[in-house]
Amino acid sequence: MKIPVACLALATLVITPAAYARRNRTDAWEVVQATDPITRASTCAVIATDYMGRTRFTQTGGLYPVVEMNSTHGLLVGVSSGGRIRLPTGDILWVVDDRPQRTIRAADNPSENSALPGQPGLGASIEKMTAYAMQLSRQMTATSTMASGDTAREMLDEMLEGTSLLFRSAGSGVKTGLPDYSALVAGQVNERGELRPVPLDQSFRDGLRTCGIDAD
Image (cartoon, rainbow, N blue to C red):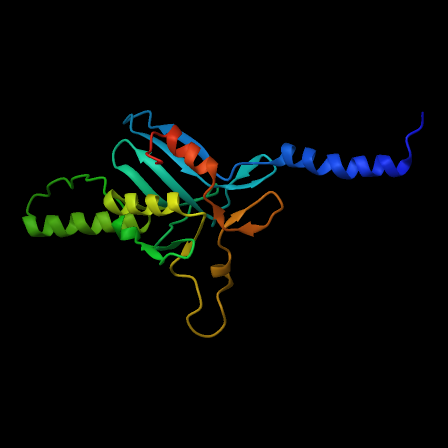
């Protein structure tokens, strides 16, 4: 028995979108774990990278939100640069839904607390100033800008109560004259190549639990 062409077309219209959605649906967040082979320090990070279909990627010059459980620093929340060549992230503007924006400062990155070796002939005050300058230099050239301690917990609580996240470099944005269009490139590239706010969806909460981070 021949099936009318119109029926076949209707069946295609009904079935194809659902099949396409199942085949291409990708969670907004993923878990990335790493252990340093020398120091044995470990990280478990929940990260929202760009994606197309099931292919996830980061781009040089792109910024990506991270919630991390770090064996040295504990809970960290912030932004990491992507791509093969990672660039300094600097200060970051961060906002969940319509809440007041936050500024995450690179100078507030958690310190490695590495002591500066004593230098013969240098006074204690000079050694202290030198150590501070070296620490500040490391933080300002860091390829991640992360909040820690109570601030990180406050930011995470906002994310758990919210639905979407936006952030960008604090150095971008309209000040005077022509607008800086790099300030408009904020969000996550989805499967259609579109920028959208990063959704704080179930994959975010699932990732937190995988990393042992309280998501309640």
